[in-house]
Length: 311
Image (cartoon, rainbow, N blue to C red):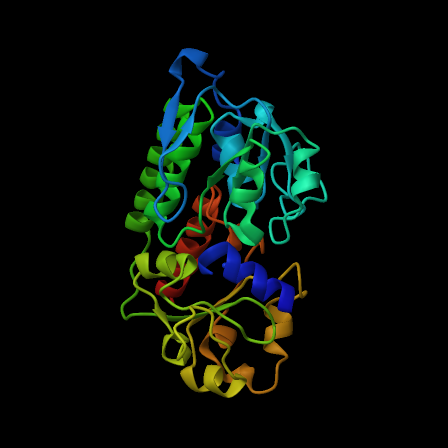
């Protein structure tokens, strides 16, 4: 559980559709000519003015969200290794490389010409610079707009600028339509997003919280985030008293949680979400990443809100 909280914090703040849309994203067009290079890219909060003289042909991804974006923009054939947390798509060359404890020697053994990472942990950028390996830092997205921007930047940096722009546009358009088409409840709904069964959660200031805010949902953990970390831990008493209308479980894989296990927790039987079928099981991976499958998460939230509004 500690690992999950650390993963979430690094991946989202300090924290991909198994249907047709995802397949369309992965099966992107062939790469453009090398004449598009050199290019210079910058990412808000990450790499600034990174100049790539030629299209990278041996890319390593050290975070799952970037792995998904790389494949979604059509750069999958250029990826030679991904970190141990990258589980999608299935064809990604998963290794024992770690994005949390980067091993410079192990990274260099893959002979990359570009490494994509979300954090400059253990002086990763400077260490790889000494080995003449460039690093594109794409930090954890804080908003949906951050995720769209990163899709564009990754596309440009890998020689797939048009595909990156198209992916960002598609994500934005799909999400806006899903939110717009969602049935509106008669009153504002409250929610709890569970990171693990020790009741760590996310506040509205996180990337995940930003998604829920698009639907006008009120987060019951915001007042408990005294430190401002974005990842408060609440008590069972606080949850029962707050009586959320919806409970989203992002710990179905790691911790085996479900509507049944939640309903069996002492005192939780009286919570509206439990009584009214408002406990929603999420895919842990999709619920912790800011890549193209965030559209799946938005669609799941939409379904939950619409179902609650119909009652």
